[in-house]
Length: 625
Image 1 (cartoon, rainbow, N blue to C red):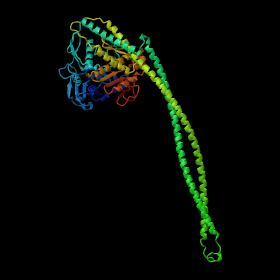
Image 2 (image 1 turned 90 degrees about the vertical axis):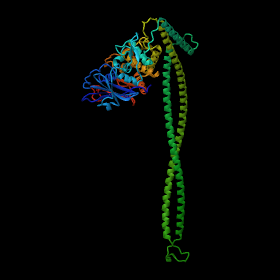
Image 3 (image 1 turned 180 degrees about the vertical axis):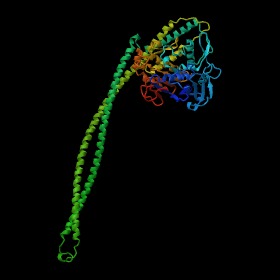
């Protein structure tokens, strides 16, 4: 039912002659962090106030002059709406559309503050958006009932800092609500079954039968788990001698060493590949240059041939001119006239001029031919040097190829060994999970064996959820703790008497404040997740004030020193996985996180981040007001 959820859009405050102050929200994750006393906790209180809280908002010096609180949100049926309420409490004005479009207007209709009012109330309107009608919850063991309201959901939506770290169970609605009522509200939220038709508390005989049935089921599960572990290690008579935890630690150390070896092999392969690429690149460039030189030499040879042809032609011309000049100034062979009586030069001057030109051209061509010979010889020498370098590079590349083949083979063998050990670790991990299940079942069997049936007063009822739903909630919370990478291997169980969750068998008050804050946060998200799994209505909003309290500065925080379990927690990167988890869940729920410290990494686009720098800041937003 992720489409049938509420989405907070904007919280705002207005007053006469006061600048509107607001805080907008992303549909997925919004993070507000910064200095103390900047209004982060006040924002959570204001959201709770706009969801029907009967407690007035605390009066701060920054809020003086403001008279109205506004909340813009998207609803499954009505779409975008805006709620407005006086800071002096009272009912609500309901507007269609955004805050900006609602300012200065009269509301479409009014909603009463209390669910029991004869006219339409805020609670009935919002529950109607979730498809919830008249729901009756048993308040006491005698069976009298109260109506379920949006305020009961609000406890699981908005968690302020004080209840976040409280030692009492997170199902506590308020100080006036009874333990029975708290449990039955949780039962309705997680099952969708109210107490309209109350079933009487079973008698002593039925209680014994029920407990005997539970013991039988636990014994069957225990025997199945022992058989499963025995199948993993056939031939081992005493499974206690396996010491799975010690084996797991040794395998982890071995795998860490192999990871380092693999990383080193990868780096070595990368270095070899780079060196080979450089050699191949150099060789290819030389081959390309050598090809160009060969082509140039071929062209020079053609040019040399042309020069030789020109020289031969010019020599022939020069010899012809010389032959003509031999007969110059002799008796004419035609008329017998002496040279002194010859009046026509017969073109000897032209022949002489031509002979001079031929000789000049011949000298020029011979000079160019000689230069061409030198250039060709230089290129041939350069080509020879390149060919020798290419041959040397071919040899180096071959050697690199051999090194690469050898390194790849070593890397493959190392990876195969790593995968073999990883498979063994997986088997060991599965066996460890079975062993823990056996331990948990033995604890449960011991608890059931100690059960003593008690006769209940006439008319009393069994309050709260059963173990099936409780275990489902515990599984959801444990999944969240694993996603956050909580140190060790956290085991979450459901305590049917308190309806709280236990961390590794310890009750809430046995943990430090920071761990209690994480338990509370995971509990609220786990409730939402069970509703999603069972296709039950849930507003889909989780607002948490200081869930990462363990990461506080003990010198500056009002919560002072860290407890032992908090110090262990701070040494981990749970904070990183906490934010990554919320980012990954941003499509199916809306999260609002208030923290004093900044997130451990730059938040991606789509996540809304507000920084409240504090009242003493010189720039940026100081706070909510």
